[in-house]
Length: 352
Image 1 (cartoon, rainbow, N blue to C red):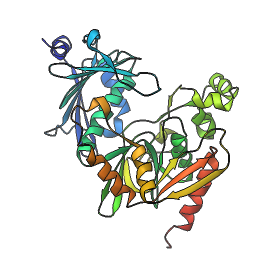
Image 2 (image 1 turned 60 degrees about the vertical axis):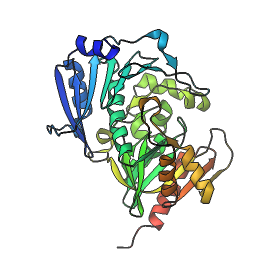
Image 3 (image 1 turned 120 degrees about the horizontal axis):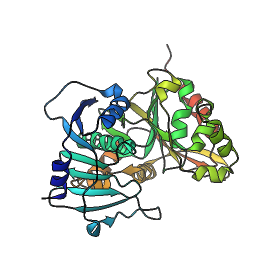
């Protein structure tokens, strides 16, 4: 009996949740009513009673993972701490989340997330979002490490590594009439002379620096936490990893969340805390293409059968040939970039 066979035998599902996200149908099975209720609340905008043929099965199991510790091999992450370990079993790829112990079993089209799912419900959310993302990649999208907002004149993406302000920028535009698309992963594809963009169906989770920069979010912090963060030096606060969810529709009003639209421009955030000067510079030719390639992401160990290496590059090159890409360098200046974007939007707005 394989590792996954033992999970199936020990934890039969008792509840099912149907989801439909931009034409991707999912059937989420779980063995725990608390998990079912939590996921039902989280994915409320996407709940569906449509049991469409071909719905992708996701199993969220509250229980003890089964794997062979001796076979686990850490997934390299450069200089950053190891988050995952993995090995391929007879019928599934097994990925262990080192911090939480939640374990993902990939036996396409089935995906299982197993662990203390009442404590780590966000890992179940991640697993469901991962299955959605893989389905969109199969539809010809490519993924950027980027946040995005959507205005009347189209979408704006902020591409950058983690912890460099891209979530803050997307949220900073919401008081100016923009809608929120995504805060960390953006799917894009060229189509008929434009670039389509799609966010990942997740509530944004942001660090304290973002919460302190935006008044509507600062007011939602408990006083003790706010005072503690305010006492930190900027460079210390910048590195704090204590993510909190931002329910954008509840904070900014119904309809603020919009998962898809047309992308019109990408800003690559190359600024740094303590940097000097500030500049927004258009990128051209090879420099534009390479900037996008550096911000592209794949599914890594979660996709045992990834697309051919050249296909994502071809799509990114087409994106870079369709819309402008700007580099933002120098010191971090959230208000400055926001004002720059709003000024350009006014100057380029169509006449009525």
